[in-house]
Length: 415
Image (tube, rainbow, N blue to C red; front, side, top):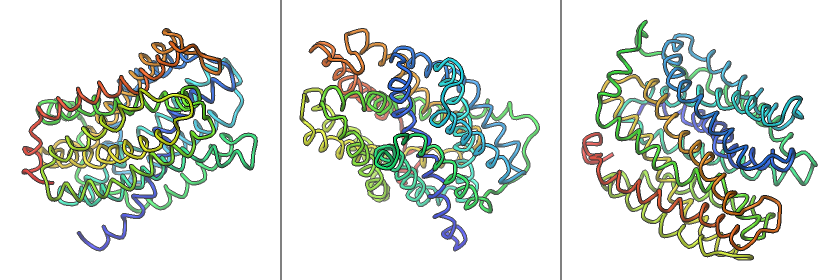
């Protein structure tokens, strides 16, 4: 790897951290914020999140095409995407809803997710262009560690900001916009354009889905993201109602994501020595073993849950560090468009979050769980089932998918 590429890695890590702050934490914080602030129901928010993901069904692949066609503009499309995301974030948490809260929730989240999607696609595709096939794993160490550290910061920030303001989410949104400006500034010189962009990318779509490995990995992205999507959507409600310790939510979140961030370099190092399938299956099996016990937890079991958060966070690091790197390598090997490929990868990952919202939130509410109320034992067990049992089942299905995929076709038996 050349010295200029090595020197650019901190910029990639910084930018990835801002993407991390706007990704998964928003699924954790936004529903509870609107429940607490405006009294919306879980079912309403669940269907709203699912409707937003239907937009992604069309939007993310088109963003992939847009990123490819605007690559010659280098940094400027990224600045526009960052501006859209910042406006959405400030509207979501800082501005009181001037219209129906559920409509405001949908409108502002559309801006956040649109900016996030475009920047994610452009950013990951840029990693393919700049680092090529050989540098993907090295880039993944910096990028995914930065991403997970950003998730950690966003997870704990509202709790820390509560000590200095009675509107912690408002301060978070403004701070995010400021940090995103500096992240875009750090990446400004890194955007490159490789080759000429075709006027018509329809053939790119066809070639992408003709690749059997690409299709399998996109399906795996949905399956493997589903468990963390479900557990993340219900995390705050589980800690507050099942464990009875709402004040512990912030520290537990930071423990979970810090474990993931610290483990990402470890998993990539293991991937240098062992076959990718073996490493992934080990991590996924550990995820089931560590998380299954959460189903049996009750009031006050915070210390045991902390161990579960640490162990399951460690396994998340494998998912986030290895799979995007393998997918990027496959795109290079097959000659497919990186922008189009990550457009569909981005959609596949978010589809799991949508399904989690539309299926699990109404399900636990249907079986008796109520937010902010004294719940019956049936309601609490429904919450435990949604939070712990369903993710374990989904992880088993993802393991079966990994067993079917011959990763060695893409990895030449090793990363």
